[in-house]
Image 1 (cartoon, rainbow, N blue to C red):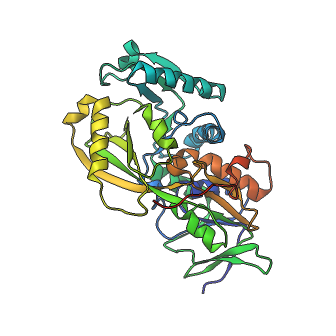
Image 2 (cartoon, one colour):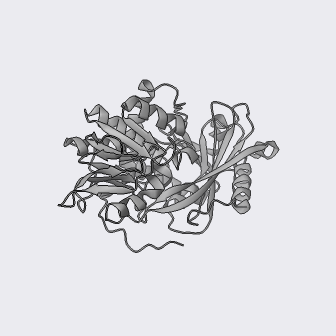
Image 3 (cartoon, rainbow, N blue to C red):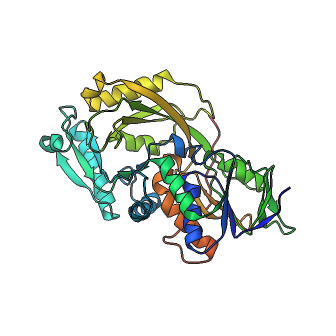
Length: 384
């Protein structure tokens, strides 16, 4: 077995969250290694759309983390080249007056928490999105919503961190000392010794927790994305119907779909998002794809004439209370968690990384991490 390394922390997971943890830990002066059983962004990150959203989060700790991350993403966009950061803004549309009234109250609560949003009346919708369907009651515009190319963002963060990176190596053991405190990890190729281990394993966060002798009820929630042929910029913002917010917060294990439609700098339109708990079933769901396509065409009728060139899907790391687990685990000294972000991990990655880095360095975190405690009561949850 190769010579052992001495580090300040080992981060398990080379997705965007693990990369952000490495980036901010290194910025705090810590020496870190990142280990992943696959490639960079090989899990949930590589199957994401790159959403950086505040519009879909009601006032509370997740929104606070999103606002922190929004500020940090803006800073990172100036430091890291080629992440395709695009502050395009979001448009949440209401099909009828009753939905618009509910959306108005929702937006008011968000504004009190620091979110920028503006109501758009029905007669002004086509000024923002000329190809939107007619007959919508109105919308709210969220200028803080943005997008990155997720795999590129993870790769750039990881490279900028200067961390030691070990890809294609599955962690088989969390090493502990006689007191039960973490002292590193073991893979089939090496031991990496450190007084702290960060579980940024995404959908496999529960598996890493078990290796450490503790429990984190992470479940996979499958989602599909459609990718169209390259087009002129027919969709200017990140556009979705108001019922998407309810889907995000739902506990249902059954198939849910609410189209989120957005253009990309390279031309294709991305259409998400479905949610369903089916374990790690990778089979293609024609029903999910049919729903997405129909809902996207309902928002943008012009898409009915457009070819879908490919479909991809992945698994979001879901925790029962819809909040990620971020920070030190008091049940296992030296173990830290940064997982369970479900579909918001790309958007929440910088704030998560900054919190974890502060805990590792023994400094004040940029926001109160208490709501994300890994040992909180998640309630009963079983796989569907």
